[in-house]
Length: 309
Image (cartoon, rainbow, N blue to C red; front, side):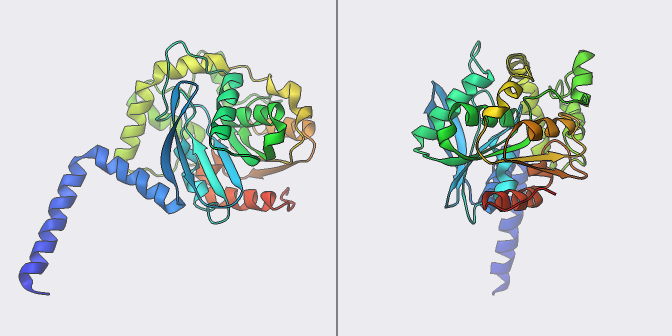
């Protein structure tokens, strides 16, 4: 290669990097694209119940429908999906009120209403029978879905799911009694405290990504406070767990500060055909903190293998 061509390429790369670094939105979009592409996921949109709903889809095989937790997004499943899309079609949506999906002032974001929307979403996508998995509030929704629409569900995955009263109070419950909600980000600096609260060991994020997520969380603070009031009935699902007939995987982090691991054993006692796996050194988001381990256990479960330790 001639000297001038080599210099041109180097200068072009430098100019590109300077421009790219100067544009945080471009960096964020690249980061999201990179994570999604590694998992084979593509973003799409659909209209559900008057809401614009964003979702990720990729892979082939039986469908796994993924439901995120409170304050979460469809991208909470991206790293987990990296180990799933080789054998399964993964669909993960931003629930209305969260992520890039629309929020309506004064709207209904109760568990029951979100279950209705997930049902409409699934059938608009022509999902016939599928596996459904949810984390935290998403587990609450997934469990309620399995009770309400049992013919849709092949298996149920509950990853640190809400919906029962834990024998041991979680740190979240203790903080709520004091009038604090660690899940609501008051300012950009408090985003680090949220990360420490939901993870055993906070995952690494590029500075621009953390800044974006923190800013978004602060901007949606009022929305999240409104939604939290509608969903904070932790005993509703517990009454109906005996009506879950789908094979169920319970996956929990031993160090979960949001929903104490003792709640996992309430689910285990009340759901027939439930298997429980508890990860050591893991917080509230096992599919993010331990994506490969979570996917490995989940895939074994989907194949009908015994996974309970």
